[in-house]
Image 1 (cartoon, helix red, strand yellow):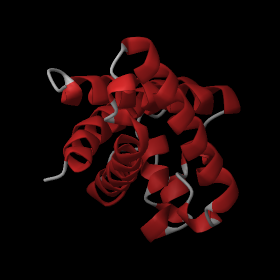
Image 2 (cartoon, rainbow, N blue to C red):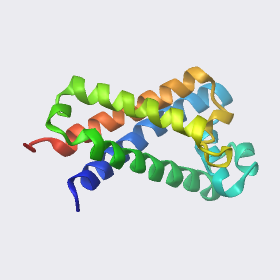
Image 3 (cartoon, helix red, strand yellow):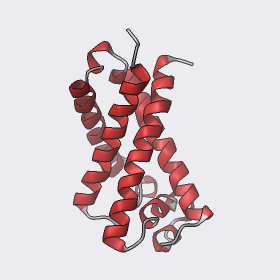
Image 4 (cartoon, rainbow, N blue to C red):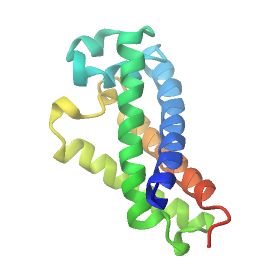
Length: 154
């Protein structure tokens, strides 16, 4: 396995978990459902139905989380390949700055270049300020994951 793939798998998992925790928190706060934002991501498969499901289900929650996790891993592998594995990215400030930039790029791509059918979906339930927190959680997980994966590497 390449170093970028290894780092990306670790950082993608961390970014996915951190951003999902924010989705749970903000979903409960804004729509009274911890699972609605994650369920919404399953609109890739279940279209509009996914936006109406506010309880945990295998069909929507598990599928939504799987999609979210895979896309987080995609961004993390790309980030690790471009920047996250470099020696200059191994300090905490550099990792946080780089991950914040990567998260901003992911957000911009998700909502400007990506066809509506393949957007994250949680924007249907969350305010813009909550979306900022979700992408901040993604950045934090990305930074922590890259730092953990690269600990001890020269």
